[in-house]
Length: 279
Image 1: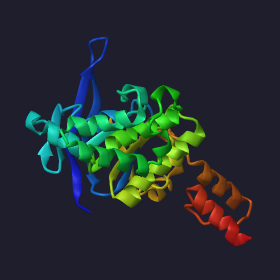
Image 2: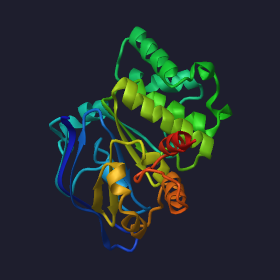
Image 3: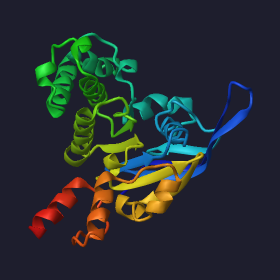
């Protein structure tokens, strides 16, 4: 796969309320590949959101470099081009929604791109259809659930047709059912539409279907690999302040009871399949 985002020796620091300088990122080197579904995880304060904000120029490096399709985020001339390629969805949709009606909010981004009215209409209809929001097209945003608002926020970014969407803790304030809906749609955008997805989360169940995951702590990358590879080190995951996927815990418990569940079973679908085969 070709790298879409390349980070090299990135460091970033900020001045805390006390006046002391805090190192949020320390010499980070990593890549986001075109078409992949990448999870970046870590406990609160690990640096994952600070890293992601460099991907579309919300932050610029103190040292090191970040490039999107060869364009440096440190060059102000590249900001508009980079933001067309990398869209961000934040954990609180109310901070991102700008209109009162669903379809008007989705149209806001394409309108700002200066697109013709016919193209804006096509993009809004496509985003509504892709995220199964057609039945909410004319609804007031105030009448929607938090999960529905988050999907509208994703649709607004999707309508701008970026190559990559960064989801920054998109399910942090949602109930379990809404969390599943948001993650299901993120997976679908990646698998069916070919959009590169960067998912920031501390919910381990959400990363089990990702192609690759990065675990951060104290502003550094501590682990990297496929979810199956990373979750093979349960003790290390726990020491980094993260939980283990519930399905993986259950699979391990069943193995201890003598039930033949394959090692490295990490998600519910795999566990159900194994149990059905036993029956």
